[in-house]
Length: 219
Image 1: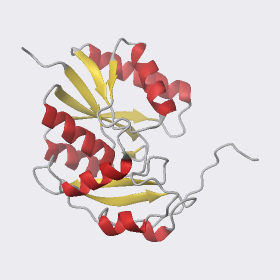
Image 2: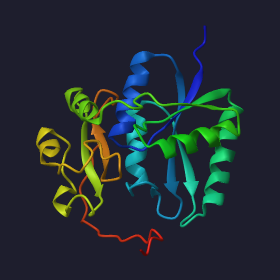
Image 3: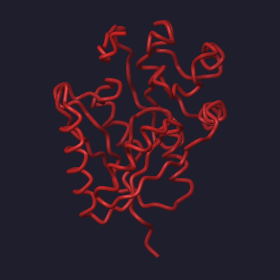
């Protein structure tokens, strides 16, 4: 019996890596593609700015082809949703019925993903949904995954956390108001080694850059 096909939404970070590891171990799905949103202007991951070349290296080491969903700079939500819908329709033509995500507990994001997929009759799968993040981060470390912090929100963490490797010391140093997995956007990571990779990803740390975003909240 053939396994159902699923695209895996790959961010390059720890939650994606752990979710993919669990999906591969379970063996319930055939995963023909990794899917990542990439800024088409600078060829960097939309979420946290990691270079597209490193993303390519991750996919090669994992052994699953990568599909880059190119997003224009400062795209409106309407444009973004259209690009997502067109991309998913393309996967549907390949017989892909499921889309897998590494989300843990952001209800609004889960609902948004499910609603977008329903429009093209595709189902969302969340392998690590609602699992305690303190247990997940320890499982990530215990499995031998290695990740570096590529982005921090200065509302929660100072710049000294940027560039650190996720290990026991990192977890112990996190302030009490920070989720261990950074699920509230406190930090983002790039995974460079672990059980899903055939070989480590070579990288070097660049300079720390500070960016301020206008969220529209002027209260």
